Structures are given as C-alpha cells and as structure tokens.
Image (cartoon, rainbow, N blue to C red):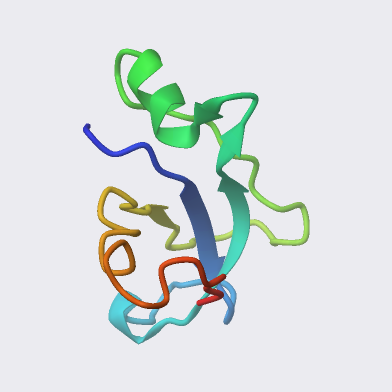
Length: 94
C-alpha cells in the first residue's frame, strides 16, 4: 500500500439486510480512523502484517444480518489539483 490514508466503516441506515440487495442500501459511518500521533490508519494496517483491523459494531444495532462497508480513502493525489492553481492556499471543505 503506497498511500497514507484514513479508513471508514459504515453500516446500512435501513437496518438488517435479509432480503435487500446490497446495491440498494444507503450507509451511515459508524467508525473512522485517521491521523493520530504521527500514524495514519493505513500505516496501522500495514504494521499488522496481514492488513487487518478490529472495529466495534455499534451497540444500537440489533442482532441480525448486516452488510458492512469498509473504505480506505486514497489521499495520494488529494492536493495535486491545487498545488499549481490560484487557490493553492485556500482551505477546502468537501
């Protein structure tokens, strides 16, 4: 992995997924790891030697069948668009 990046975990907003297509779900974020004490979330994945991590499922979810979505946000080119533009020093909130 070459990108130092944050990670996010999501669960469906609609609840249990027993007869719903995963492609029709909308998700809500329940856990995120970013940059902490000089270490990116992806650095922790690499250091684990098998690219695994542990997340705590929210207690508010009832027992059942769920589709979880895990994301690694690629930041390796995040600033390249603005480096040579007139908005290079602007604060961007996307």
